[in-house]
Image 1: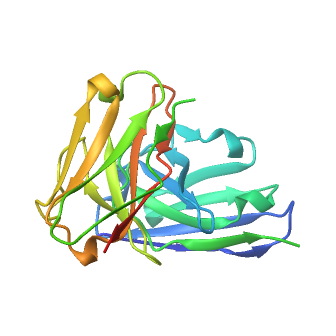
Image 2 (image 1 turned 90 degrees about the horizontal axis):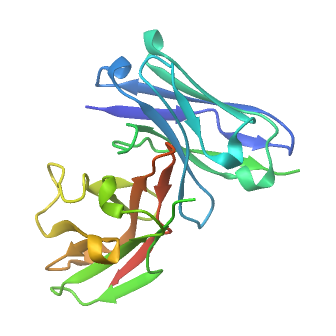
Length: 116
Length: 111
């Protein structure tokens, strides 16, 4: 069974940092693009970033460029999102998803709350 | 920036058919594949349609997708509505600058 499990969310103050992780299982992780998608409370879905199979290409939504960094460790079947200079508007559930232009499946999400 | 626009909400009775639209802001929506996701409260999204009109295994054939180039829009049609179809539905595509875009979501009420 394909499974994605996110971790690392929590409460952080504005300007702080957080690193999210996503553990993948049930498929050949190194063969797929991977993505992060977020959803603010009561709001819609927003694509955040994606990364190529070997990590050689990475793309970000404009609102997080220069603050967030997506990475992966294929030996550990893991995807990461390093989030720096966090703002209140970054508060959301962050989902890890397999794929580049089609996201499937998704993890259960991890909640990031940016507040003082 | 490329945007996708959906109606905020739609409602229909059980057994009926409903169509949710997704209109592209620029360019041709037919140039890149459109996906549709279903999200029930408290759950992660799941795919109901990918590559414009393909259904993943396990998704009933009551769900169908289409593209209308003349209106630059994609549509998700659900026939034989069931109460379990009540959820939020999101369209999603991408543009030439490697940006992936979601529509704002449509809340489907089956009453």
